[in-house]
Length: 248
Ligand code: NDP
Image 1: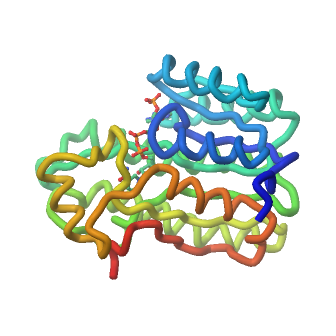
Image 2: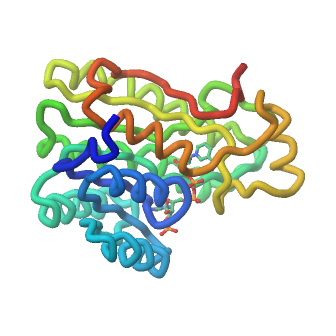
């Protein structure tokens, strides 16, 4: 695959200021795409990422938009289209986690997870669809927790990621006739602020993988880059694990 296989493509990544989203922004940009990304709180990280990539001549734009707010998600799509001159690739990455027993789960946390992890994906996709043409790509970042929950406290987060998987299936059917692919990339344990590679929780997750270790944001970004590219046209409605063997 050419290292510039996304040249001429225009991508929107939600939640691109940190972690896996920032890794995806870096990779798509390195592969030639013009990239817009959203963030909600980490303005300094977003500015640093834009400065880093634009210094190399890339087209990268940061947009502040809360994924929990349908109007802000729609506005972010409009801003991305205006800045990039169109849209070919949407990566629904922004999400949050909260671990707690299901019967003690704080109602405001429940609402936050549903609004960001499910609502953000839905409203971004719904707003973007009128801009997407034949050959476009929608890539949802789900979680291996849609398939396997290795311990207690993850039922609500897992429920939101199960919704990502189901939405991906339905949308792949809806958009197949238009030549738009829709896929669900499911990471296993990846070292980020949300899931740092240290401490008892991290050690317990490592034991669940076949490889006994965490992955890197670049591992997820490499798969996203392939799915975003021209050689993945017959892959749609798929659940693609990048998890070190978490479900083996
Ligand atoms: P991080 O918490 O490290 O980063 C989350 C990113 O999403 C940040 O850029 C953050 O920006 C953004 N974000 C959070 N809330 C909002 C919001 N309301 N509106 C807009 N942006 C928002 O998470 P990860 O990188 O670890 O996770 C990224 C994706 O990968 C998620 O979908 C997650 O569920 C999934 N995943 C991660 C795994 C892991 O082990 N790390 C495993 C399986 C799945 P800001 O700080 O500006 O709010």
